[in-house]
Image (tube, helix red, strand yellow):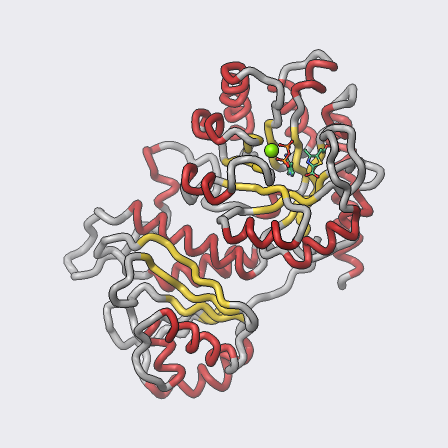
Length: 408
Ligand SMILES: Cc1ncc(COP(=O)(O)OP(=O)(O)O)c(N)n1
Ligand SMILES: Cc1nc(C(=O)O)sc1CCOP(=O)(O)O
Ligand SMILES: [Mg+2]
């Protein structure tokens, strides 16, 4: 896990607004090129700004945007996103992200609205906020893009002022339906720190309800909960899921449903976790929409890459150690975990045979993208869930601070 705090510089080279207003003259170009771009972690020009920085013709196609991203990258920033919101003749809003090696076309639906004032600044600010929360660059950009798209959609019909272009509503979440927001926009990778995954068989064995088990795990420090109720009847599962949603949301903890998209939709859970033989993540994303969290089980680099393409938010990687909870589960070991983490563009939670005795070793790998551990039996196949969750939480905290000391 990367606990090290690194400052990041997001440079939005504000020069020409979407509406065509010139906001800075050519005198600033030299400063951008010589001072700011070389020290930037990411730059976020729109089409007109990219061509101004490069001193080239208007960018008209996605292919032009890719060439521009590459040339801008050569000017020094670690990452470039060229925003294609103004691209003529495109149905989607396509942005091109370049990390120095690979190009990614990030698409979102084009929202028809006059209220686009401030979208560029908001995107850059949201990227900076996500980086400050510990996200790596590509997930930060994806969250920011989703935030802007959702906010634009929410505020497409509001009328503020008399100009041809209005502002969009940044704090739409706080207002929607007049209800209290129970979850942050997007997904916070640090929620994966202590991931409690329930098991109906274990709860039955110990004679407790799912809701009591979930309450105890949250009280002990679980940061996200997944209901993995393999044997439950649908109506009972839904009843329990609704009750657990209320419990989790009253504590600000996200609740995900294992395998069952239908249950997640019916109880308005925060998302789902799917494996390689479950509903494909791309289909789950279409069914659940851009807001819900989607996790995918991955044991290989290829699966992790596909999960990213499919629009997942995180991956679960295991079995780190042998487990009795999931039959015939392939153990990938710490080395397999490290390989997948290093290649992943998404945050990773480790799973499989993890408990208070070995969680420290997992976390102390300090491998990039590893954000936490997911556990079933170490919490739910024990007499006291509260005690075991507290114990595991303490182990994870100690590992986190040891890693922090080592990296300073
Ligand atoms: C966090 C997390 N990681 C992996 C899994 C396993 O999912 P899957 O491979 O679909 O197996 P089942 O859990 O459905 O048996 C998970 N549930 N959670
Ligand atoms: C549900 C699950 N998925 C795994 C994977 O490797 O993808 S291992 C696993 C079971 C984890 O249970 P425990 O913490 O009791 O070992
Ligand atoms: Mg599954």
